[in-house]
Length: 513
Image 1: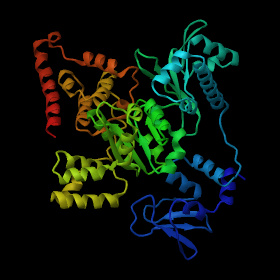
Image 2: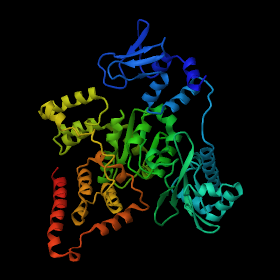
Image 3: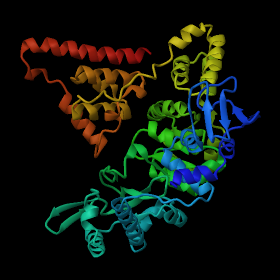
Image 4: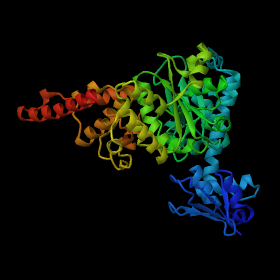
């Protein structure tokens, strides 16, 4: 008998599904409103005798494992493991020897860095100066890399040097000479939501550039698929019923120190679709704790569509100017607590703005409403907007963003300089630079999306462009793309002027809306 058959034989599908949604007995079966689509009347049925569920509204159906996989946004095999643990059914987990070896090496290196920290007074003093407690040092397994030689010696002793070199975390300089990417840095081990060490982050001591670096991406580590602090905080997220999203490593660590162990952050990349999907397994509500400046507002606009699309309620808590969660947690704990306790639902805030005739409130409200997973709530929200704005419902529906537009194929023909420039435009908002550069038509279209705030239409190849130091690389790309008319003949100048005028139109359009 297979593991799947064994688990399905031992579990009660009614018991499994009723732990997620309310079921009502209907003859020999059970019924409910379908959790996978807006359902005014119960169209979701469970047959205990056959061990299956079926929705006659949206057509989804399957066994208990399939339900858990769909409800928690996880794979079928992950759901199988989860149910096996819940019902104490032993199963054989298949994991390749190669995967096991590499993950073991990451754990070995994490322990090495952690042990090195204890013998590094400068690194300990730095962490103390940032208010990092010994409790957090232990909880997050913080470490330090004093040099490359000691790590290489350990890896040779364990016979795993070649395997670890393939991860890209050490680089071979010459025969027998290697450089640890994190040498001289505070090391922050990165764990996936299962608790496995899959990568490292490094923070330079005191000063130097780049300030932060991450491990190269690999089959185990993709920045867009990892949330820092999720493994350490997932039980607290479930317990408190919401997650707090911040922007950096030390923001998470400081928040955990202050008791907000339900705090997480993306890894040096914009909060995206996979982050939202992963977080939705543990909660249905988040608080975005970002700066209240223009950069913070861009971060909210980038993250919120993905969260709403995965059924999460979004609340906002804007930090005072010049503060981040790390500094505020140490300077004014009462203010931090007040910001989190009084965080408002994003639609509640926008509705207040609409009633007060605030500029852009209607546009922003319709933009975010377009991503709501709950279409019944979306309809009720638009009906309330219609009453306040006196605009017909049909007009409001027409203004919702075209969220179904497929953009994954876009961006493939962009040059590297264009990708970096567009990523910088998203991060830094330097729209005045746009009038100075010569971009391809595809790059200009994506720039229009960015300036209009339609970040969901920006392709992944731009959002996840691999950049060592974004600020300096952005400036280099800007210089490379800048138009120098002295290098062109007279007949070419008119073409360049037309292209520049198109760029200016985009900037003017952005300033109008």
